[in-house]
Length: 460
Image (cartoon, rainbow, N blue to C red; front, top):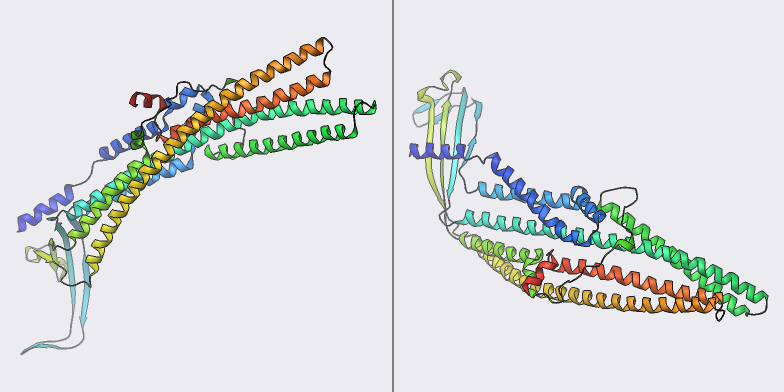
């Protein structure tokens, strides 16, 4: 028995995880987060500024930093739970001086009042024999929760990069719309001036003049709204990049390109790549392990325990052979009656497992719905952009024809200004539809769980 106890002590002392193992985990995690960023996909937009911003996001964003800390926290929880599978070793030193003030009798033996020192320096070890695999199952449950946290981190990367890119392109849209709006205001001011001249010459009514002045105020209001949206987007992007001030660099609208050859159909199996789907899978496994643990709690547990060290009543005899301390034993434990607590706990875990299954099925339906909606939104946005582009080309022809008519004297300068205004209004629609089409590809990317859309075509 003494040899067994010493052997357990050696295991407890020598089972120290190597630093190299933790370093390897850190390297793997860094590689995973780079993969979550998915720069290969974002480079399809041919916008170096966007790519650089996403790199800054990776380095600075506080939500991403917190997601990384959550991973580290739960890795430690797994390690703490795994510790329950190992022998436990502790040093419980005891030094005391006892004062007995009354005489004690043991039959005919009389022990008078006395004072006594007690020095005890033992190493205490214990080990629960995991014959039912209960502690192993607890560790597996904690590992599945860690997997859920990892998928939550991946979901954070997909959401943040997608939301950042969408707001980045919306900011570019605001820049272009503001430029067009300023030109519209300048044209309308010219129209108001010419209408005032016509009114003064008796060629226009006061109602005509008021209508043009009202249109000018509407255009100025729209300009104010665009400027407000622009400022909101700039501040939002600053938060993403962990900046308190400064402008946000962005590309010019005319350099923005639309992605071509995006798949028009995507197999619904792609949802198996989504973080929330993988989270629910891990949650089912975790709930299953917890239910098994609750069932094994009904069985007896067996603990091996022992002590080795020194016990003496005088300090100068503490390390003598006669002061050696050793004891060991096996302690079986079984709850005979606990008021139904363990059975209630088992049923609770079974209900939680059934709940996890229902959440899994619901997630599948929700993911398929989001994928289908996102794909339909992309198709609609693309069609709307094509229609607005065709309408813009027609309006441009109308404007050029009116310019030609003015040159030959069959149209007035006001007619040209009105047509120029209509052209700019149609251009605003084309700008909005182009950016909406671009953002719809980001939404579709997000719905596929951060999958490169060009890779999904091969799976159809």
